[in-house]
Image (cartoon, each protein chain N blue to C red):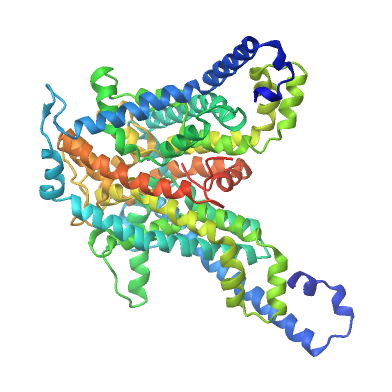
Length: 322
Length: 297
């Protein structure tokens, strides 16, 4: 603010120089990101829009195709609607299971008094398992023939599902994998639960509130911004859900052979398709870059809707301003 | 409540019946909570246990439904390490993760500092764009990016398309660091300015030492990101096995050893182990990072 500067009388020339210096300083500090933003975000985004109207296979010159790619993706590409349906399933079932389970484990860990550190580490560890490794482990654990899970189920006389090889069980199997890696949510909920003022619990107890009532009327209102945050980021992560379903489908189908064979994502029966896999399938397997860009833009629109939601909420969610 | 009742000093006083009920309830609750804790721990740990047990089985036994190996075949691990390419994948992964992490930290710190402490027009807009970039699935821009790296610069089959962008700031790291740096009181910066420090000196001499935990968290997240990345190597390196990383090569391992779950699980253990070791050495920084942003990379 110019009026607060003691040397305001020294003339506007000095002030302008100071402002220019500050602007240059800001520019210098911001420069890595400014370049990155232009080259790795703005330019490719504009380019994606351009290609979505073009017919291009990576060779020769792109040809204008109008809305041809858009109509192909929505009307004729057999994988688009299954992928969208799967995404909806994952948002409804996987995200809510993860939030509820994460909150449950968070509640549990805040009540454990003996060996808290050990329990916390054990609960958190699977979250760190590299996705490809964790997926391979679960395809093995849940393989219908010799997997430990089905061996145990069989021993107990329970039905033994085909898990990753059965279209009705593949998404529940992926959900189990996601629940195994719930450590990130556990840590967030744990921090939120420890922040709830103790006096509120004591007051509720004096009023004779039951454990459920204390949870419902004290805990939940206090942590609801964090629950909201977990749900929205969970939805955004579902939009990016790629490695686990692709690797699970690939490994469970047994179709892996280096370069020769090509694996069509979605095994079994398109049940593990997600939108990011379509970009890969269209762009890098069918060499239809134009249609791949159409799916990419759908993905972009969906992600940005939820990101905007995340930034608009005040309170415990991401705050952009001061 | 529980802690007070557990104290042995309480035992000396004559115990009223009401207090005895309360104490019994506390004990029952302790048992219930810890039983549940053990059950949950089994859910989280057993997958690791079965993976390790299977990795030590003989070829024949790995095809059976047995859960525990008859003979402990430690040789499976040497077999995996001797697989052509496996050590190259290790080297590539370390290069990608190491160089990528260093570049990310170097390029993201000044940006995060500017976003946290400088006042300028467009600051909030920049921050919102950073958050948007952070939430953007990498597949959205992959077609133009691939054409840029592969067709214009002819760099497909290498890891450069994955490493070079990290010299230009990583959105997640910028955001995490910015959250951390805003917690540093302005008085420190003002004091440095009074002492005659320029902006760069203030950043290097005053801010950086205070920001160590934040930088450690960013470095860890970025290292894990590169270690775990599957999509990047799949797009840029798949045509050249000499440029594969562990996460990408691991999947092909199952293909080459079609029925050998024991070797595949041994390879899986070898990919998981370093991450878990790093975590044990840096647990605190990691958990701080998670609570700071609540978002994973």
